[in-house]
Length: 492
Image (tube, rainbow, N blue to C red):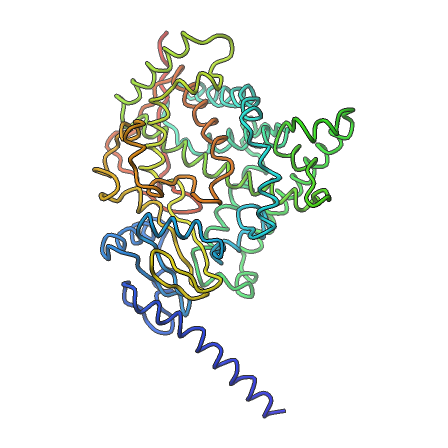
């Protein structure tokens, strides 16, 4: 028995050394900060606050001027540097989501954000019809209704300064659930909503675990109070989604034209999921819930972050705000009935450039990760199996070799002639390659409608024009002290 045990231990040791040795050789050939064996940089990374972690990664990029590495124990993290490396990583079919993203499965299961291979391909194809322009155009009236509720809340502030992110969160939470699931939760009218609070806390707790290697092992995390809180919040949201899905399912079953609906005109994301079949079988309740939770988690968090910085930029650059207001006024005079319709939004070219520059300057998802599953080449460099590759989208968007004066806010850099000259994969606010965000047009539609309705009625002013934002990376880019604004009623 002892001989067998010794043999097994020896075999395991040899396997570990052989596998880790390849990773070690890869790591030592890359520049990076000093690391302490066998812990690497884990103690350093685990103690950094979100705002300092964000700055440190950017400083390393500037310091090393090339792809660099961090060690988390024996795990190698490589932060890619160039658009070419980014292109290769996003188009490499052998790469999977970084292991860190697997921690999201407690909430979104095997949803589109973290699924891979055939499962991802089939579900992506099934969801595609939900984002057809004709379907998105049908959401305009609903989006306007929720935005107008938000503007009514601003009016009640009587031009007093406010931290705006909670207001945006509840508006977008209602908007996205209503348009994607056909259910109006009315959380904007209920400041104590358990659902919006639970959803908000889930994002915070998941990110906290994702960036702290010491919390990664389940046997450690499951003994913490954080774990208990997370599972309680997840249960609240899962129960809500199960209820909404079943209600919508019953509603569709009462429709006489269910077969025609499933083939020709699904009205929202949930309708598509409820009527879709994959390899001849309908999706299970869990599969539907996973995709809905994925869509809402990604959609609410990213769109809220983007709109926060868009509103901040409106206040920060009043001349840009005036240009947008004038463009909107001209479009309004040329339009009839409901405003803005999709045809109206297409005319607002400066608004489009302004939002593009906001998404560059404040890179909403600063980084995303991939994991090597077999030896591969990225940007001409060979990587063994088991390496985490991080795509630094913030770094690309602020690289002076790719963007002239990258720390200046200049919407005109996205005028069509300039935009077309940008190097491919240097500007990817919605990721790129086959995994480009499926809801990007939907998100832009919401943001543009919100900007138009807001600027028609209000001038956006910073609470403190001298305040400098302290940026930090969580699930998305955030401002440590929030976004503090005043909304001044326009005189008509």
